[in-house]
Image (tube, rainbow, N blue to C red):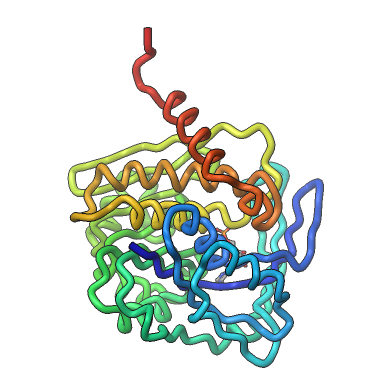
Length: 305
Ligand code: AMP
């Protein structure tokens, strides 16, 4: 099965306490599509400007990502700049230049309309709904979101939720969205708004997965060195969606989602080891396998004799 990924494609400038890099390949769709491509065929929808380097397009193509839905518009590519504080957990957006992204309306090529797994990466919830208006009976729809939309497009986000199977957001966003301090209550409150499943990401502390009377707490792979956390959430969502597309034939149930969340976490753990998508570029399926096995061993609940 294939994954449809719709989101932003960006040129990012990222500053950490030790390094700063400009004009990096970024955007929610870039991370998510490449993440998913380690497991399944991917179809991408997004927009870039005429300044978008050809090498990046060639990189997507080399990952066998279908680019029929990638539009090149007159003007400049979306630019985002962020700065991380010393804990690499707190981030401030320094600047945003929407450029061609300002008038982006995702239109699906005919060949994408029947994609089974749909990943609505981080873009305005109204645009995410517009994508769902075009897909025909998807098997599973995952939506990611961010604090910006909770603040400025709350009603649109609430209108989207009954149409998705799973919402992914981080812990502070879940608290902000629901007004609940407890993440357990927040997960339940979001499920009550529509999605059967909710994943709440906790950065370096892993992720909580909620289903109907089902709960899974996934740790995070312990990394000594994090260079750039940008796109961890998008890579997580992409890995999760790609894994579901590769594995699943019947109804998607909690057991598959548990595994998908683990693979998403493994992919995200690689992504933060270098700036932009550099670590994903160098990643092999054997690396993923090896880390998955280590992660599983570390997460064993009972100590083996
Ligand atoms: P994350 O670290 O998961 O929050 O994702 C970071 C990526 O999101 C960066 O590569 C940005 O280019 C992209 N991004 C930042 N703001 C927005 C926005 N408002 N809409 C879509 N993508 C964004």
